Figure 1 (cartoon, rainbow, N blue to C red):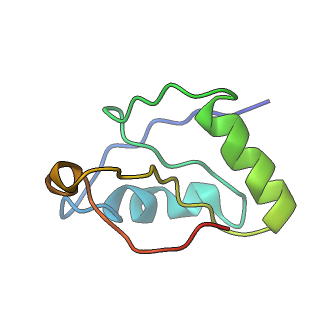
Figure 2: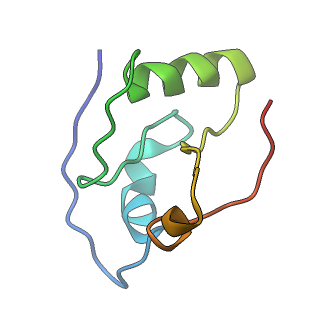
Length: 84
């Protein structure tokens, strides 16, 4: 089962601040970090896919989606990569 803990964010407002504020609770345990406004419909659901990949690969998982048109480059943060 999962544990859910609420921590108020202190300090600068960047992407890593929430993780830094909760580091003492996380320790060396695996965790899922998501933004409340990132809604993704997928089958199986995103968390299940992330947990399965973590169990298979044993490391950090960064969720991504394929960008199909040039117009989408302005809508999303883009990182380069290759299909595996």
